[in-house]
Image (cartoon, rainbow, N blue to C red; front, side, top):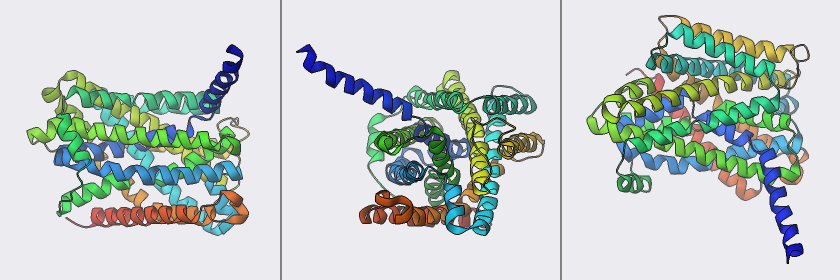
Length: 418
């Protein structure tokens, strides 16, 4: 009996060990998607529209998982990052313009993350200069002095602390029956404010940097084709966790701010307003969640830019490389950290406008990235048997067209004078 049980037990533990060794890129990328700009969008959505906005998160999950899976598959099969493949397929000129656009998008997002750090520091009474200088120095030290394995472990710890928002959601003691009904009851209010929020929620789910970052880290991690199924689980878990966190941010604000008729513009406003309504602990957890998300993403956004630009231009990349072996990679990372924190230190910088502009930049660049991805993943010479099936292409194209229309609409509405 014991002898018959041993092989299945060994197989079970072997499966767990392999999965844990592959775990990381999917969860980290999706979690970082809930960055300062995303948290602000979720907070405003909950405060302004209550639980009625929750239904939007159900259809958000599919495009998130589908597109991240496509990037993972390309990275595993080709052993190359997305920017590297774009250069090989489309040439240096196209790659140069694509990387210039991506660098602008990543930089505006980095500004958004440092604005989130500054805002969360101010919630705790920490001066903007102190929180920004210390955070930028720690971020630089972790990445430049670490290895891929050590940095990934820190990223996974950062992803875990998003639980602060889940706890905040429970602390406000929402009406769970209403929450459940609104989650499965789609309805659309035909007014400009509601449409902007819906487009904002969908537009912040998938950002250009997420595609580049995940594929690059999968390549650096060295995940092989035989472990592909484990990577799909990693991506699915990451997507589900990302949506759960976003839902609880909306619940925390809907169950307090919306009920009290309080309007907000930022996640910082939400944290401060929660204190008298839901208690000091809830407010502190919300503020801590903003800091964790901003700090976490402020490491990943510059890394995503460094990976992608250096891959696209054929330079050495990788956290496992030493500074002298990949100077362009580390110089670009250092520049983005220093410039991002430095600009947000300026006293007249409007943090709300910074976050808004970062989302517009994402909206403009995202369609180009998605078109590149679809062409590459359907290249039989490149992907072989792992190229998209006809059914998967239909699902992917519908998803991509929807995201392009929504993000373009978000950019247009945002830029229109009010």
